[in-house]
Image 1: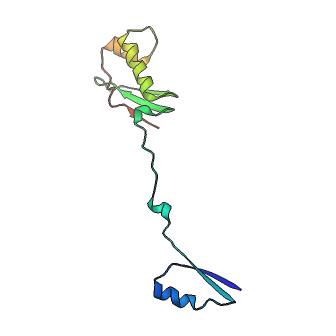
Image 2 (image 1 turned 45 degrees about the vertical axis):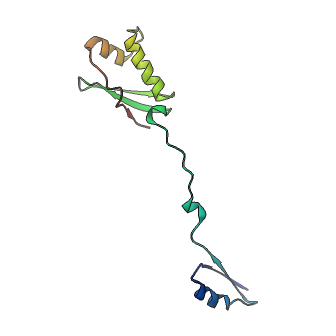
Image 3 (image 1 turned 120 degrees about the vertical axis):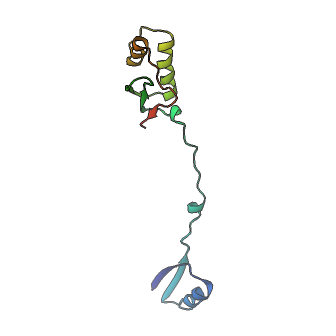
Length: 116
């Protein structure tokens, strides 16, 4: 017995192939177009500040300096902490806090880079 599977072809051609079907030869047809190729379910991508486990970079607006940090929490939570440390003039040691309080420079809080 011989089995043969062919890509779906136009009807007149497939009818000719079907004539080959016998006790010794079996022909089947398959479609190359799969439904999953046309219907895809996509999740909405997370905004950069909603991602966790990231490395990030915040640039100084007034000087050619930047801070690179890493967090396992949501990035927006960590950025808010940095901003609060500056606002509260906290004693928590942070390079960002020290630079802002000592130099009076502003950071570009809206355009931080997220490296993953």
